[in-house]
Length: 223
Image: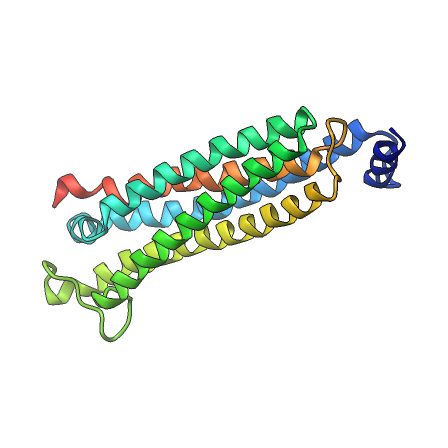
């Protein structure tokens, strides 16, 4: 009991009166951060929508060149990672430290699978000369429309690249949480970092849920 009380004392920052107040402030801070991220990604989604409306046929051909199966696999992987993250948060609420570590490791592994699949997909795009630049070429698109195809892939790499960056940050957060849990830092009375990290991870997953149909599915019927 004394050890647990010591952990709780260390966890409570001096600017807060209670654990509940600290948790509310941390959660609010994360929601504010996520709102700014929504606006950031929302701007990119808007740009994609505008240009897709301007060049629908070229975007349809470019979209159909993406590896649909790999995109679908990554979607399933992220949905599973959201589930394991929920289980990690639940384990933290119950003070089950071994379960927290187990589910965080599973989430971490699934995140690694996602990044590995995405890296493989990017490698294929490089080999197919679908990287915007002087060597770019997309089959099925007229020469005078190649610039519009490059625009699609510019948006594709920008959006999936930024999403992958957020995944890498999430992997770092999960790794930190695993080491902190092993030190006994989180209990049923103090599990705010795990809870807040869960919000971040779910946000990253939701962004992909929008990216997948926008980039891989929405234009295929127009080809």
